[in-house]
Length: 157
Image 1 (cartoon, rainbow, N blue to C red):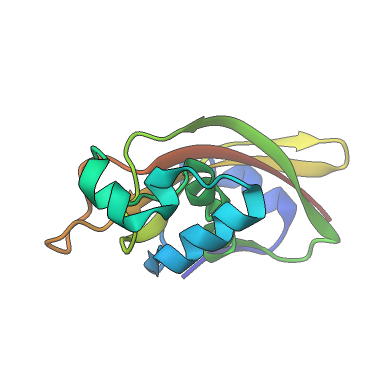
Image 2 (cartoon, helix red, strand yellow; image 1 turned 180 degrees about the vertical axis):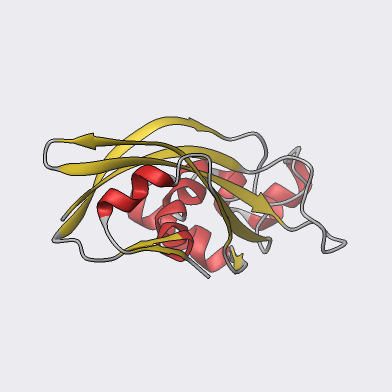
């Protein structure tokens, strides 16, 4: 369930706030294949299931790092909702890291934290760190996240 604020200005009070987690999303081999088609990245570690099982150090196919990153956009609205805005825009990213792979068929979720917020050019800019967690085989969260991305968004009243 998203943290909800009533205005962009209310974001200024959320610095260091834990936004909780999203629901789990399965990263299927079909999704990996569609991403490969969309980006032209058909490297065998992503799309050749048999070869990846036989030769990959990961034991099977893995999601593209940029596919994992793109799912941060899916997670953001489930972590934070800003009401009474005329618009919100994606400004970019401050830092992105991929500490561990996402195996095909794994479930991932986003965990959010507000890192910074400031008034900027008629709106409020917020940095939300989204940590993409991977569900391990025992149902516990894996020790290392798949992705950590500091997203920058700007909301206008």
